[in-house]
Length: 390
View 1: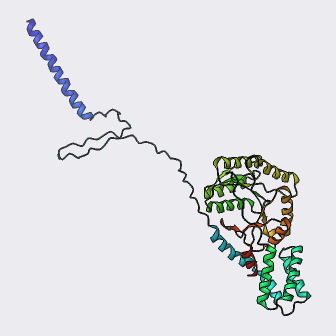
View 2: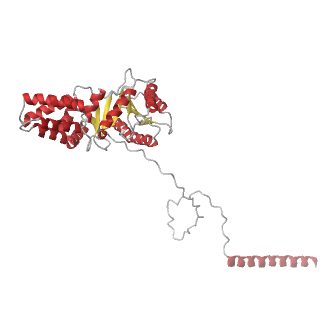
View 3: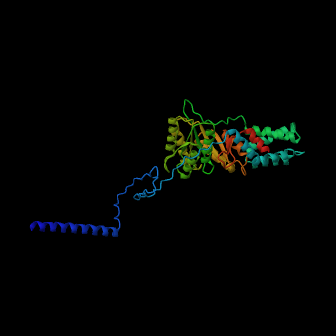
């Protein structure tokens, strides 16, 4: 009896188990499949190399890949494209053409007066007035008129003769014998040091940049010194000129002692063994003795590293006789060795070339006739006189 009871109990338990399993299966199907656990990672799942050919194959769905947030990268700064400056020969041709167009009125006026049938005192006074108006200066004007009177009385009467005489006398006045070469090379392996001075507004900083282009065109290595530290715009302007032709610019914070920047520029040039160092100085007002003394200090400090081989005074040709006052004061502070005349076009009077050379006893070495980067060229006395005559 006990064995029968045990058998019945076992059968009952088995039956209950079967009923529970069937019930669970039915409920599970009604609820649908349980979601997969969130086990995906940042690893990109590679697609299969070949798709299965069996039509009965089941496509497995991979868990979604995590989307990385877009990171905005900073723009890549491209290296500036270096310009190839224009060579000296081609710029001379272009500048001669511009000079002839802007300065021919003086020569034409003189030729018209000298070609008159009768050269009386009124005519000679008109010639003298024409020369004075052109900013040649009183002394050179009187000298030229006397020589013209003598030669025209002895030699000439025709228009062709008048032109020849006038050209020869103007050429003598401009003095083609002056040495107009830029001293941009140093001795004993040292770099040439060019100190550029002048008042604000004359185009001094621009001239420094243009001179560097002339030297780069001649395959010379150059370092620029931005010693006009009182004008932040001048430093930035010079840096831009340097970037355009791949020339290093030594600079300091605004208000830095100009002499220290000049010293570091020349020191850098000596260390690197460059051909030329060009130092831009502050545009000193010529009537402020303290500031002019500081310019002298800049020159003395530079020469602790290397001798200054060239001191260029930049003058605005449109200032006329006012430029002569500037020239005198600067020449007293630093030993000016050459003149750069800017803006020698339009309203500029060509006679300033003669006047400034006579005043300082130093030659005009460079002239600028426009705003273009290569509108600066060595001064040529013959081309200048021919341009005056038109």
